[in-house]
Image 1 (cartoon, one colour):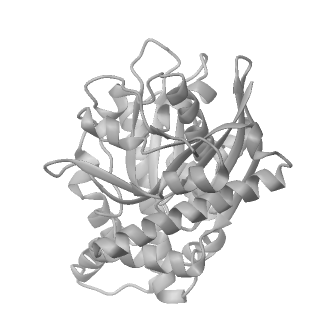
Image 2: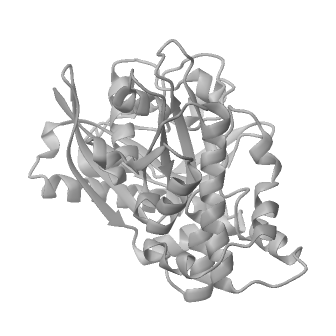
Length: 371
């Protein structure tokens, strides 16, 4: 057994998730997990960079280093909380912070910031990073990368189930009870990102805690139909997306096209319904015998969203947290990158080509030594 650290900040850009994971022949065991919010000034810079979609080279370089320092700090906080020394860690798997994911462009590319040399040097631990680029170089979407880990942790030979991560963007892994089936996984569409942006605009808070504001409103059928009509939802997997598509400009255009105005809380209610419908309709389409949906990521804390998922999931489709089956919902993504780091050191492929569309399974990530 060996100890690894997994680090990620998702598209919501609210905090750095850090997991201490033990990996070996008996299996994968989460030892400790913490969330470390970004410093307010860095969070503001990131939001501005992503929303504006452009920055100077100096700004990009500065943020790249700042994120690296923040990830290193999150690692040391994790180890202190777990009473574990840096010397006992085999490697860090750092996803970094996605600032642009443009795999439909020519040439395709994806960019995650968070200087791994800084992380390695600050912590004294070998760091594996830049996981998505090799898959894109092999003709893949570079996302999602979690399905391989989902399969390793959650596949059940007795029933079809889906594992759905709801961060800023939601992604689903469809696990057939027949292991001979090719693994299917894809980004469903928005997770929390539009709800977070809308509540920030109107209430000045970071998120709709528990989905209570959404629950106070009434979903609007016209707006819901407009949101679900985006061509992205008709595309077949492999597919991935991000805030490059699903952002405030995208939402504002659809609101402006309505012949009426909606109360802000009704828009929030519709966005919650939209997220739920985008997830469950894609599962029903590609895994019609699905009997269980396991939710991980920040969306699991949105009670209204979980209620809508249960309602939209159909009779007999159980919706619950991955925590109910032994893996805390907030920790799954960070654990994934610890696992991917372990696979990189063993020179094992980290992508699932049937999921990403890559030409073949490839070894993901570069290795950065602290010395």
